[in-house]
Image (tube, rainbow, N blue to C red):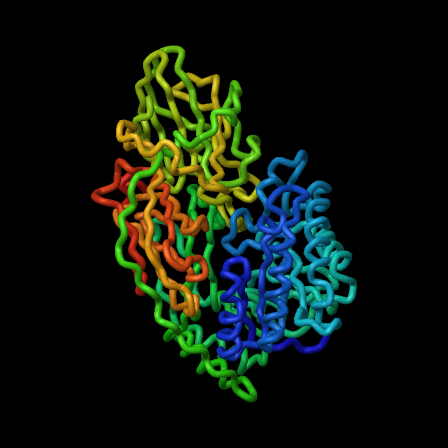
Amino acid sequence: MAPLPNHRRPNGPQRIPPPYWRDRLRKARALGLNTIFTYTFWNMLEPSQGHWDESEGQGIATFFKTAQEEGLNVVLRPGPYICGEREWGGFPAWLASVDGMVVRSNNAPFLSAASSYLENLARGLRGLHVNEGGPIVMLQVENEYGSYGDDHSYTSAVKDLLKKAFGGDKVLYTNDGTEEWTLEGGSVPGVLAEIDGDPRAGFAALRKYITDPSMKGPLLDGEYYTWTFDSWGYNRSTPNTQAFVDDIGYVLGNESAGISLYMVHGGTNFGFGNGALWQGKTRAFTTSYDYGAPVDEAGRTGELYDTLRGTILKYVDGGAPDVPDNIPLNEIPAFELKPARPLFETLDAGNVVESKEPLSMEALGQAYGFTLYTHITAVPLYGLLSPGDRARDRVIVYVNDIFAGVVDSTYTYPQNVTVKLEKGDKLDLLVENLGRVDYYSRGTEFSNGILDPYKGIVGDVRFGNTTLEGWKMQVIPLTHLPDLERGGYNTGISSTQPIFFTGNFEAQTTGKDAAALDTYLTIQNGVKGNVWVNDFHLGRYWNRGPQQSLYLPGTVLNDGVNKVVVLEVEPSRVQGQMKGVGISQRVWETRGDVDCPGCV
């Protein structure tokens, strides 16, 4: 194999507004990098079974062409499993409803679906490989599989699918941890074996444990972490810049090897795009995928960027392009958010599903969002509520439309909700999917959350030893906003139910660079919910933090009036008037949870 270029940067076009792709790529090139490593998200390319989103696929091809125009090569990481703190590791939710499906395994239904995905992806990238004059120099087989398993029949099958889809002459590689068991489990004969994490331990492990000549080649640290992700309810970490400088110097200087900085620019988990971990409780990732990266979520460079650039350029012949100037972020004066319609009032009564037992979100044909479960009690009941085998993930309880508590799987010991029901009372359970698990390691004590992606209610709803039977269910995917003008807000409706709020602000976009309109949108006094601007779903907010504002790209804005819609799921917890405001300096802060004080 020919030596690979040695300064690289992972990125994900599906987390970045397309008009900003070139800007982010230029900043990568100016950092001294020469290659972009990028995932592709299967769940965005094939959102429903057999429905390939051609515009999404064409966008990836455009991103790769733009990278080449900016002097960058591309390493493609198509999975089919990618991790990346993405919802279910990039898998589309419909896989969970396919009979006999076992993901990440030598399983006929999974390999059939993965083959179709890879064939469609490859079709849109024809002509873009390096031997065709394009930028793609290498493809990754799966992702960190050695941490997950050791079924070589599966990884060999994925290798064969990639060669079938993209061509047998393409260079393939695997990326695994720095220990013997991860390298043994993930490496594949005929595929270049590489590592991620600590480069010193990783390169030593490659030399010690990889003995098959068909797996040997140029050394690469395929994911060197420039810091880490953020999770709801956890404090934000601070990067160790000096360690980065030392490690990059070691890789580029001592080893003359390759290093991929994960991340240089992370972007945003817009909408419901974030994943989660299962650690005996749900650890859900924030909407922001800032990652503490040298190019921040809004595409601005800072001190870390400058430090890393100075280090990298010591090893780059000919230097690098000048760094594009940072454009100051915009500020939007505070504007009121007024109640428009309660969520439950917007639901379509014609879309109710009835069943003796509650059905999971997947069984109802739903991928993301909320599901409402309704039961009318036939006899008086009193006791501790158990919403299925466990909360999946956040269950808000209402009795006769009045808030009664929250059962939240982000805690090892969730808040207990004890409820008293009389005959004829209505029990509503509003269940939110906080993000499917995207990573599991067989080296941990926890169960494999990737093989348990089901959301909503799984199992029986019980009051003590009494099982509740007879349910009406409504899916609330929020793929489209309801009509918020019809009917108006009825002040007689209980303020404990989720409510849509609306507001607007003015912007002048004509003749301006969209980046000059970028801002961080804060929902003042909001507790938990989702935000849309001009029908674009920015994502979730939650005052637990650490994320306290949402990145609002200027590309979303209209010239003149811009409409903001907020779904606040806990209006009874709101203290004061809800307002929106755009700030130029974001704030990270972790706060206590009003729904579960003292929970861990």
